[in-house]
Amino acid sequence: MAGDVDTTRLRPVPPRRLPAPTTPPRPGAGRATAATGPGAGPVAPPDPALSWSAAGAVLDAPRAYFALGEPEGYDERGRPRALGARVGPRTAAVAACVVLGLGLLGGAATGSWLTGDSGAGGSAGAFTTAGALWHNEPVDQLFPPTVRGDGAGPGGADRTWTRVAVAPDGGCADAFDPLLRQALDPVGCARLLRATYTDATQSYVTTVGLLFTQADAPAMSALAARFKGEDLARRTDLVPRPYAARGTVAADFGDRQRASWAVSVLTEAPVVVYAVSGWADGRTVDAPQPAADAMRAGATTAAAQAGLGNEAQGLADRIERGFRKTAAPATEKPS
Image (cartoon, rainbow, N blue to C red; front, side, top):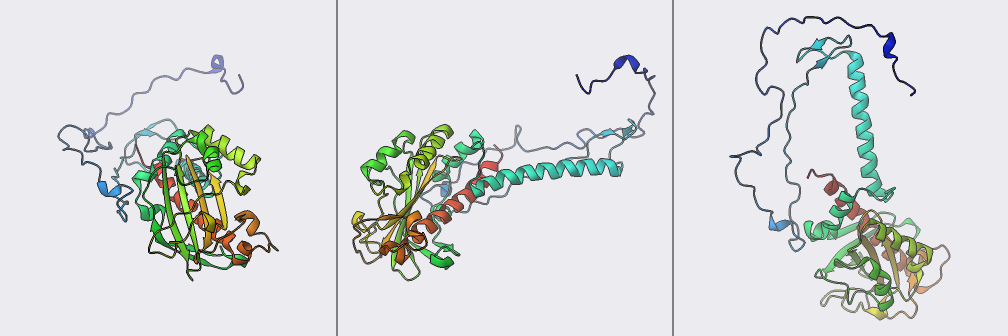
């Protein structure tokens, strides 16, 4: 095998007697200890404020860090190095390269989450963890009260959306038209979260949803491939339904008011993100237009001229980015 060493040409090295240490090392020196053994005290139960129903819960609990002593090793000539000895420049350079490499790998993994480039779909543990965020994160984390959309409007104009209503988490029975529900049946419905927003002028309303499915990674990849291959996100008979809330500008936002929509099937998490937009004055729309078409240059439909394609796509994109940002550190937490 290439790289093997010819042991017949090696000279045996006579054993060398090493001087005894003048001071014996202290027991346990350089080892990390954690309060996890007997007598460490009972473990605190989970905080109920971290559930979906507890909006505004504080999530950034402090982490425990342990200082590790310098490991005992050998110098460049094979001689034992005492603890605390100065590390040579070559050893320091090697250590720096290792740390840099690990940092690049970790940054690449987190970056793939935030950009949606998951490669092979991420690890099974990260996939499962992301699918549990619907009951591990507060509503304000997944659906912020205010969402900024810099450059999200027509012609690159800035947008700001304000949340006006949050639907109770539940199933998917009444959230989709029958054909869309049938298209989503292969991945199942574990939980559906929805919120409705309005723009700064309160002229438009948009419902955005996070459908947490029961599927594994291959099933989500298959659904994403089908949506792309059959262009399902553009079919006017596969439009998500809005969430109308009484006493808000979205009170009249019903099925006949749907003007534009966007659907995104994630493959690194069991989640489907969607948004559907319309006018806040309750006017009906005869033919809704997918956001991808309404945002095209030169589009002349009423939805396109009003920028409702930008409303749906822009808000869906920001909620999806926020979900990825929330999911990335959640998947990195130690078990």
